[in-house]
Image (cartoon, rainbow, N blue to C red; front, top):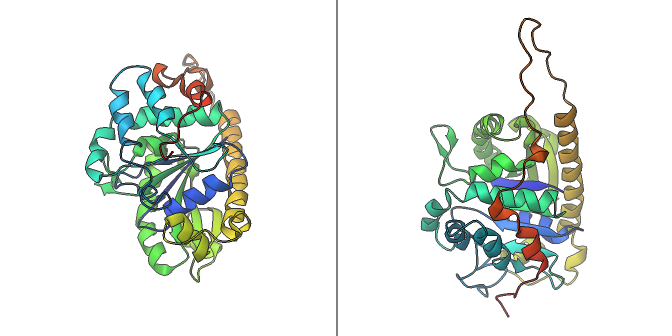
Length: 309
């Protein structure tokens, strides 16, 4: 399946879009709320029913406790978004001051997301929040950069307005450079367009010099419910937002599959005849996950208690 990270230059509906995608998935799905500026799902959609005892910060503590601790903690800090338990969320930070503690935990979490996607068949959506730059690069504390490096796709969420495009335009080059140097490549970067404004997809693509990989309609009632500021619409399952999110996930899965095939079969330049051919590097697929994440799927299969009960 696919690991998709959503980011923005400013608040543009990243969390609402991530929730819509997670809820609309036809496969097991996970939303990881990893915005260093703090999570909003706890106080929003869950209406403060989830206490500070559950969530992202506790994984930083667990990761330091031993090899198996992160796997145990990860499963126990997920909260179900539906009765079946197929759609789950990892609630975010309750205080932005907690973000520095996660600096050494992000790489291990990126491996967890990879295991859930590749071995568990999960659609993984990462809410990475608002981007922060330092000297033209992603800020090492205020942005969960390792999660972006390991994602199949990184989508810059923008609204169809000139103001949103103006803010996003300054983020495209740093993001492209980051994914080129440390991620899965610049072609992982695209746009998730929120159709709230006059600009069309081709105009957004031209302005940002990025492909619009998916688009979601502006549906205020459903968006308000997901943000925790409104009641659930009478026909939530048939909402245009969730329907479009389901279609978007299909498009993103196809795009990620094409990228994977291209990377697997990309032609390589032959080595000069006068020089010996370098030893072949081991294939990424043969690299076993770190010990501390090896038991994640087993832990998830054992079930957990919803902390709201």
